Length: 626
Image (cartoon, rainbow, N blue to C red; front, side, top):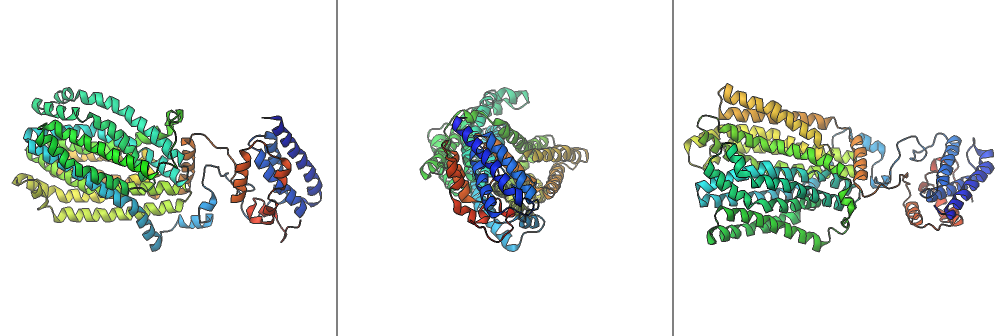
């Protein structure tokens, strides 16, 4: 603190005592004289300009506040400076960003959205979820293409490749996908609050997190054959599966770059480029498989390498779009030690999100294992494979809706609009129920025809036709549950989602499935009824949590999260309602050489506009006299 700064603070302090003694002596309990008010208003602004550097100016401002509150204890308009309420911090959006008053927001938080509001919200969610669903379908077709080429190689390669993909899903892909989703609430809320640098910083941290996680997963994959043999799997199939997963190891590191980029763009409502890039990569996937598998006869290794190359192509095309479009410019942060600090907030969100994703993902793998214990396991496992492929296809739509509402809720909470966040939740849940009804109708009507797209075996077709209507009922619960998980992610509450999934799938669904499938002798249908019980309990718990959400509290949490994830904590200052005054304070605070006379006298015309001052409630007369 320089001597010049101390001098300025002392001058302000002396001016304060002089003006208070002269002006408040005669006018304190009857209202300030206009001349005295103008001087105090100038002192008010002077103290704010000096406060970042000088404690005397801060103490002066506190005394000034006490005198003004004593002289006018009941202001006519609420003020963050005069009224006893929680202060607004500089990292939160200005009230002028929100077109609604506090009364309007309170009213909207306790009513249903109007048809026009609902339609507008459907459009906003559709801009994100529509392209995301298209991307999901494109990537689903990529998986089907790989399965077709595995089938072309033979039954052994198909079994080994399927086993390897299942192992990779459990131990690798689900973990990376779940950890990457931890950056959704941070980026979504930071984008809504216009703190764009936090997006770039969180992107760097998430990439480092996923890359560091991929290293131990790679070592596990290197020992996959031993693990499978220890679990009692066939030696020949385990050997083929080991070959497939060895060539898939680079995919972990490409996905560690790809997943964060997808979340980074989606939280900014940029989704169409990802759809285009996915389409290009999948179009190249077919010739890649043909070249490696058919032409070079690389066998199952060729299928794995083609999958890795497709993800590499997707990453390169997406990175090229980000670079050449300039999307990154506003949020780019040069790599520094900041990306190695402040991981607590990211890990607190990434780990529960990962657990929530894995718990649901692993359930279906456990279902396949349980099918192997039933009578005629060959038919039940094959039927389960058909049903899981069907539910994976249907899941694209509620998953896309979940990602869309997560972005919308995060953006609105970050922008200090709790009512709009609540509207997003309501509209998305209604859409989810509609999706569930359509899925149930589809699976019920197609129960005798759908299985014929995969096999002609009569026993497999019979099992599939019995279980498909139950799977449709599961989707009726799964769609709202998945969408609710998106709301929880957008509001930075993934731990609640993880607890709900743990209780529903493993404390309700698993016991019911084992009891009905093995004790009650219901077999294959009993396992799916266990899944139905899990989805129903999960949906009910999720609806209860969402309906009892305090959205004003979520806005406060969003502000704190954005503050913790920044590179540095900004000074805690009340935000003035005057944009010109804010700009003036920012510019002058950046310079240490501030003339006190200029501070007290510049922009004197601002005093003429009472609306531009935090001291407006003190004016009891119609005009200000100079």
